[in-house]
Length: 584
Image 1: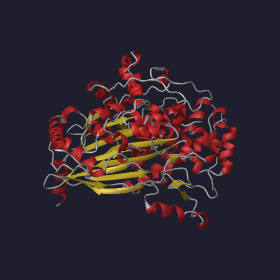
Image 2: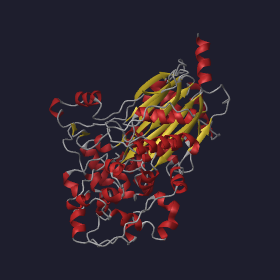
Image 3: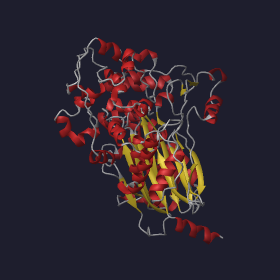
Image 4: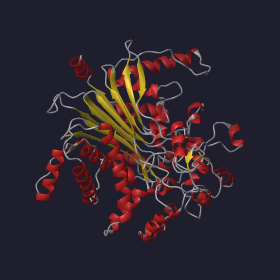
């Protein structure tokens, strides 16, 4: 979650308000060494991935200027008391028994008062090319051919991008075209307690969905090909960025689980019915994959590497938001708190946002009620505590997270028989409080159907890192203006601030500059991330703020925002309109 009020409203918004948490960087080391503003080793172990793009600056000790600037106080009255530092909420809340793992032994204020060093105020900013290289490092675009081999597609193409806050990034994304059926699959996956589960789900879920959509004859043909050793029919055509890797070590295990699934589908379906219910297929695919993740962890594997991998996948977790687009039929399956948002262009050219998913967390009253109904009445006060599942987990639906699904006996048995890395991990051995009637967590998705209209211009799938920083209406407006190149001008809102005539002139100049530079980004998702990270209180991208946010060491970046993953799907309005005309 991004807390940026101090950064936005400070007259000289340096990193003064965020460096106090640097004491957390060495929180696992018992001995602490006084840190000087010129000592680069402070950041050597915590160098963020983006800084590798401009490593020569770090080699020349430029990065130390960040710390030098931060330690210089521009507001003397703030030096009389410790500054308030809001903390970003992790998905897992630390239990009191393990609180020492999450906080430093002494406060930054006590630390710095006993060790004062002189510092020269210097400013450090990334240049625009450096900012662009960071923002564009993970961007990917795909344009659908005019004819996909079967019919004209209702999807023009999509843009996607990711900006990490965790190291390594815990978000994943996937996009693929269904080859044996019609339609396209796109999804974002938000991991927690590590990236193992989100990685596995991003690799496997689309295969489970595609198999669930296949007719009986095609399933038989695939099974016969496997039996006879013939080449398999390709099921999916993936659209991947080079960083979107697949785990080769687990591919055989994953294939065997998938094959067992389609064999069961063959046995259950006699081939009499040819109609495929997309909603039912999505729900079955989500639930079956989560069940396989759990089963693989319980059975284990003779290969020690694979055995540890399947346990890491099961004990970590991931939310998922997946869209299936087939002609004018749009299905969104959501598990967790990522979101799908439809961008609709009104007759006057303005933009409106239509939400196609519901967050599965404490802010959703129906989710809270569902949880309470699934457990005895004497657990009504403990099942959701402090807006978290059992006081620990923020999303109420997720893949993996077997600590909230398995019985206590099963957890102990798997951990004791597992590798030493798992048995020595305090988190895996920890049992959630008030854990009486598992499972408390499910991966079953909530599926929403929407029939596309000509005014439906695009779909945004994004993890909660975006929605925590921007309002849905602003998100849709920014993407809509970017895609159309048209800016629907609104009166400048200053939010109660006292603005001079000179400042208003500056805001108008910024607005004009933004209009002229709207095509600086060649990717709609990149353009949206630029606004999410760099917007000031007036809704304009502030390069100074953007530079500082992208310069943060990885241990600090997570305090101010989460990983951000975005997919922007653009629809072909002419094709959608033609579908409507055919049915009239």
